[in-house]
Length: 468
Image (cartoon, rainbow, N blue to C red):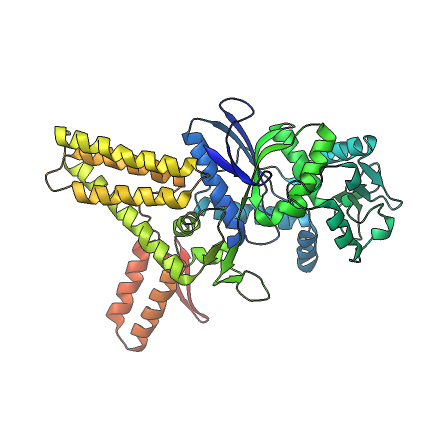
């Protein structure tokens, strides 16, 4: 199995630090709002990597954090007049709902930054003692970049170029830094912000130190795979390497994996462009399995463009898989016959699609080619399962299909749950029927929704609905 390592810029044979075990850290979201589809891509991609590693027999210790103290969280808390903790806890719960909808397995550990402050203070103290960090007069602690000679090795940036670039920028607080490149490990509190006691001042940690500490606590000083979006390569992951390797005196992570950006209708997603899409919004139009399928339809290192057309195409493609699985399930239950010698040969032939699938995944987790192998299996199944076929033959093909889809995190049983948009469309149709005095159709729609667990209430403000 080969993984493209951002550190070396080439594919490398995967050899874990400890035989049969994988230690994997994936940077999680900052929880100040509902997660957007840009957050969803690394979640889905690296969940699939984890599932495949487990399929290969590895025991995976998978850690993904929640950044629950941050300027954006504090800003939101001030706007709403509540505590930062209330904001972060609310959006951690909402994030977990969306992750469940995308069929993302819970991490072995989901640490929160605010629960690991003691470890951060300890690591900062060690860095100061080793001359890799220093405290300024106001209590801000900075990492001393010039003392880590390998700084820039992940992002492949030259230290001199970085320094000249930074000199041309006015960086706030730069006057108390020894060097423009030095970054914050601990910062003093501002009025109304959450803070913790430390040897330097009442304050809170810098963002980069959080991941170094959580990774060390739950995975050890050295890990196999560190992953995240390519926007994290510099400075976040570069700074993590500097902190961890200077503190522990060891190589931090063996393999660095980064997924490429996600665009919306060929434009970068941003609030200013009004094309910012949350996972929750997508869930009102599509089953989130469609979003998962869409994300895996391209190689994780390729830029991915999100559009309504591509989502429709993904929905139709996923339906083909689900329909094939449904036909096999029906045949398996209806036909008790045993496998014939001819069917035995066909089942052996079908194993070839498992080999194709694994070859694709072994080549830097090429999910696009792996899905192509699933479609070949679907075509094979549709061609060879006939009226006279045995239930055991259908069952054998179904188990292969379910195994491969399971690695992709694709659930092969169709959900009957009605989507928010479908509900709104039916309510609009019911309103039109009532206006046209077609009360029979209006009643039919009410009953249809009721059977699907949707209760309608006619109020002065209009029709309200809720799930039973």
